Image 1 (cartoon, each protein chain N blue to C red):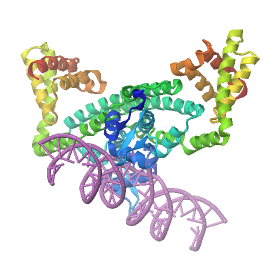
Image 2: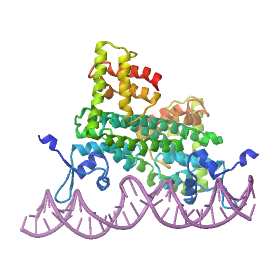
Image 3: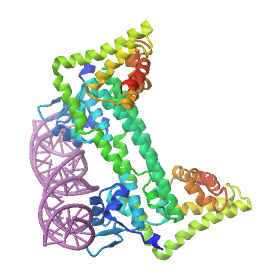
Image 4: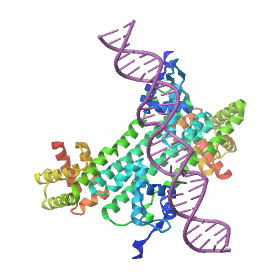
Amino acid sequence: MTTTDETWDIAQVARMSGITSRTLRHYDERGLLTPSHTGHDGRRHYSRDELLRLQHILVLRELGTGLDRIAQIVDADDPATVTALLRDHLSGLTAERDRYARLAATVASTIDSLEKGQPMTTDEIFYGFDHKRHEPEARERWGDDAVDRSNAKWESLGKDGQQRHLDTHREVVEALGAAIRVGFTADSPEVQEIVAQHYAWVSLFWTPNQETYTGLTQMYVDDERFRRNYDEVAPGAAALLRDGAAIWAEANL
Amino acid sequence: MTTTDETWDIAQVARMSGITSRTLRHYDERGLLTPSHTGHDGRRHYSRDELLRLQHILVLRELGTGLDRIAQIVDADDPATVTALLRDHLSGLTAERDRYARLAATVASTIDSLEKGQPMTTDEIFYGFDHKRHEPEARERWGDDAVDRSNAKWESLGKDGQQRHLDTHREVVEALGAAIRVGFTADSPEVQEIVAQHYAWVSLFWTPNQETYTGLTQMYVDDERFRRNYDEVAPGAAALLRDGAAIWAEANL
DNA sequence: CTTGCGCTTGACGCTACGTCAACTTCTACG
DNA sequence: CGTAGAAGTTGACGTAGCGTCAAGCGCAAG
């Protein structure tokens, strides 16, 4: 019983997370992270939920997302939005990694030209330097559009609709399990129908095209966390969805 | 002749580099990047030198260095400082890459906990999240201390001392070449003496310890750009310096 | 002659905190 | 029990790196 009632004061949270207490106070001020309760003397106390939310916030902050948008994202607690956002997250992380790889190449080039004293062409000078294209893209990806629309959609569903939406995903996963047990193949009309349902489910918040949809389902297979979610109903469910999605997407997207 | 007299106006530079004209004006204002000349109407014109300087600036900016410090760095045009700084550059870039790898792991962990609804321990929540340690370190590494001392040292040398310093490195490289041709081994007193000279040369601006010094000389071998600089005098010069440094550092650092 | 484009110089705005300052509260110690 | 010191609190102002007007000028085209 005592383990679930743990709370931490501002200094402990600061040490654990590696940010300053000032930042925590700032987040409280902005309404981004409110302490679970405040002592009679005004001291802030945080519980496990706040720690998770904070970690969520910090990951997004690392990616350069503004606090306003972070608030929108972490407040969107429906699974479809979270799934879509995390997918972008992961691709954002790998994109960053690639960006630094290109930067390293540019630095090496610069070293070369500095050491040799040889001039580079103007094209070479800024090669691999997508700087302009990178920033706006990052901001667009997390733009008001996508997130706002997503949140608005979710809100507009009402309590009932939200519950139905959650149920829909359950149904998709279980239909996949049933299809596997019966032995349907990815190109069967039955599985294609399930894929269509899944696409409709995802599309409620985010509209993938052929490429991104096959990429999404591929990730369900590649990423252990997602795969487990599907395969716990029936082994191979994630793979079946991916294979079915590849066929379906080519025909319908 | 016409090729070396090229100039570009602010809009062209902005397009090439991917930054805004406002930023270029800001850099002019700060004295960070002054146009090669200004038209009678006040219009800014940039030549090749400014483009190179700008690229230098932008690379540093990507790494999160402040404009003040960027100015110090790009104004330090001596090879020892540049060598040390670029070494840190490259390690900084790979560190960033690693950081994003760890972030990806954290994101995956978060996905897991969100999907499963299972609580993570407080340690797990912030695992791989060196956030606090990362930022200050980056700022420290480029801190006033190192760069200021380096610049001050360089200035204090005077024109003569600066030239002597440049010559010293030439001497070290050529001594290595001679040692190779004569067949001296890394543990020979002659090579050890050369290493001592090289260490003294580096130490004028930056004082490596055993680990960082062996790391530095290892990089001379690993990085093609640096290696070429040594090996063009005699093949194997970089490797000989590294091997000698390993022995020398263990004995003297 | 004027319209419009692209530049110019101020000047103020903004984000995400850092950094005092002045004050309260809890804990430790004599 | 009194008090010092550590650690929290709330304002409030400062900072970096530009974005974003506003107002004006020079030049080429119509």
